[in-house]
Image 1 (cartoon, helix red, strand yellow):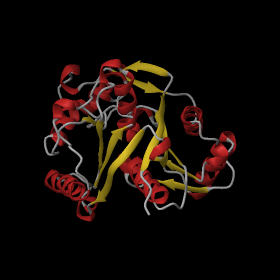
Image 2 (cartoon, rainbow, N blue to C red; image 1 turned 60 degrees about the vertical axis):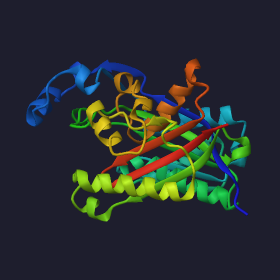
Image 3 (cartoon, one colour; image 1 turned 180 degrees about the vertical axis):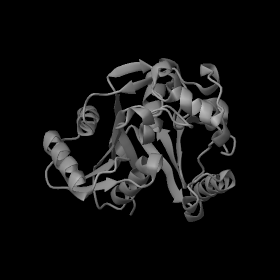
Image 4 (cartoon, rainbow, N blue to C red; image 1 turned 90 degrees about the vertical axis):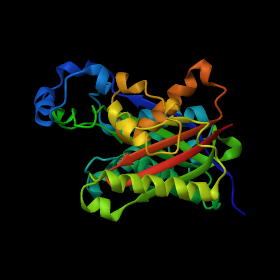
Length: 304
């Protein structure tokens, strides 16, 4: 018999330094290269977050916060998934997992490094964790997503301003969760991967397929939910929202201004901040959505 699964104690940290986008190296050159007007209100940029810490330090800070808030002991964590776009090799990944596990006080567990899906990697980890917990194979899976920019000239991109940050959550039985997972779907388009994910028609088809498959397995009302996406430039968000069967007026976009794009962590960061506002406590249903080159994922949540 399958177990109803949820996420507990979502938490995040961002870089400790808040800097103005106007001072970013290479920004004006990139704007000129792509013919983008330097208008903050149009794109939604204002500030970004930078850290002087290592990625593993950010990962520890957020994961320790999740464990403290969840009431679940480190000894009861059966698996650890770390999601990151950092190009670490096998040995560096092992070193990261080893240090993080030791600092958190985790014992022997199923540890895995999940990447390759870019900003959708967090959802890949959530889907895998939900399957493992739902089948009864594991009780509690700690999921951490962390990214930091190694080269400052890479922070300003055509699609967004990159910030350093990390987020975490526990996938566990819904009885001890903050949100029940009503549905989760992550899908990859091989054709889109082949051309770098730049074909908008292929992206639209992928988004439509994911939502269509979710509709077949859940009666979740996507038009009556808060929407949490990635904090890329606002026009890019609006374009992607336009092809999703959701009410874009419910999209939470405040963090584009203050945090910029924290890779895969964005939807969870937005979820946490939205529900921290007193006026939003009555919103029951939430949609986390994320796109990357050739990948798209959605997590449907019911607040408990």
